[in-house]
Amino acid sequence: MIDVTQVFLPLLKAAPAGRIINISSAVGSLTLASDASTSIHKLQASGYQASKSAVNMFTIKLAAELEGTSITVNAVNPGWVDTSFGGGGGNRTVQVGVARTVELATSDALTDSGTFSDIDGIVPW
Image (cartoon, rainbow, N blue to C red; front, side, top):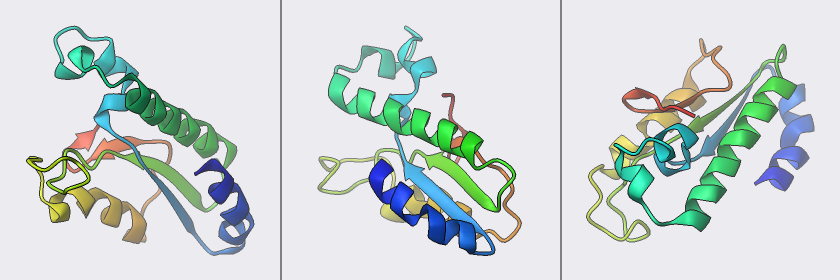
């Protein structure tokens, strides 16, 4: 992900506006993972959780690096989407899971950068 983003940055910088949207997960939230009252605190998926935390940090650092440019960088939590990849039984349809990503990718007025959100709003880092 980082290598691909770095390769495409010159093209994004040459464009009138660019959007980088990293797909993360609420399980990558350090805030939720450290709160004993959440289901994420109890989850035992250390490798997956660590990889999503890394996505979040990359989002924060790249957004800071590109501050003042026409490129926004955000992370999205699609939630547990009902797909075979997610093990089935997810509580969100594909349409709901992708909605925030599409919104960030297509909004002409978007100025927010360095955020972590889902269809319901901000997800804590």
